[in-house]
Length: 499
Image (tube, rainbow, N blue to C red):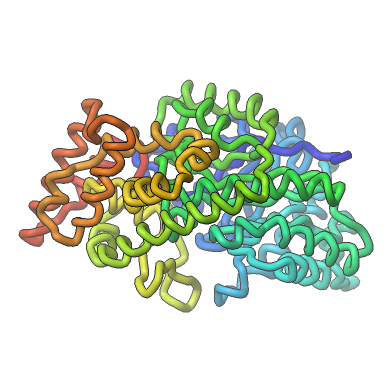
């Protein structure tokens, strides 16, 4: 029996909002304002969990003291670690030259001591997210590192006051190959955990990314890989006798998850078995506040009831074949148009204070031999060009899948494919494609998608028609070396997300 509340909604600091937050006077959110954002996410929006990003952002290390100091009466009634949750996303030292890990641990330890001292639930922070997880050993390594720091003693202090000696690790799986085999990583982790610490964890919260796998492999492979992962988690839960509560890194545009205040029912139906959904900045700030609050309430009541589908071995084998087909077409195309994407991405508006990815502190994203912007920048750049990335490789993938006789099984497990393609297709600008031979293969995709859907991909709403006009202007301005910053911002507002 799991003795804690499992949050259904997790707010993140992803910088994908186009408009001003309801509580702020400008679009840009500085590090200094994020503790207040955290409080308002709990108190005003009604979310359960807030992800504090130590990996890619500058962070306010006094977050816990700020929350208690400025809003003590709220957190006395809604205790952190019991009713509301603040969860640190740590750097993964395998891929980042980072020196923040120990600092994050010290904040968790000092928060435990402070909470106990003032009579609140302790420990208030006890769980961390490990990005880019690939092995069970990485998860154990984080726990061992914490255990060593937590065991340090000095006669002048006892940071956690004895209340935090072991932390829970949420593994974030960000590549489709890793995701599809992540149940095996978790099974090994349970064995190692028993050996190293003498007990099994009460539960696991595997976290499947939605944006980075799409950036690396395309839309359809990502959705199908997540379905394979969710099925694997369901089987592991029965086999190991440990409860699993999967998290998904959902964003607003279909390419990055398709979760908006308008699409809660479709999303919950698509990702049955997910127990926590990420609510990025665009979800919270690019829609009317009453609609956002109502949508969050709906997710809180609906999401936990979904049960993942069991995928048989034979069906999983077929899904893996489909994934390989779509991924091949997507990656070939992306390698050819990377230079155009990178050119546009530099004009996208900044919304948060990120650590600069210059080699000293960060890492870059890449597909094959080319480097790309982060997922938000990539998606925003493609939409600004009038080429929604949902379409890339998808048409040719559909044609090949039909020839292989695998269309039915694909549609069985990607429930919202047609509606996702229709929504993305509304932001397509075919005229801009005609002007650049680099986009020739995407024309094939569009043609095959239109055959599949039975209608043309074109703008339907006034916002989409305006978006198309702006994308034509962007191409024209780029030819003459003119600035496109304001156009890019206006387009982001129209589609209700930077990327």
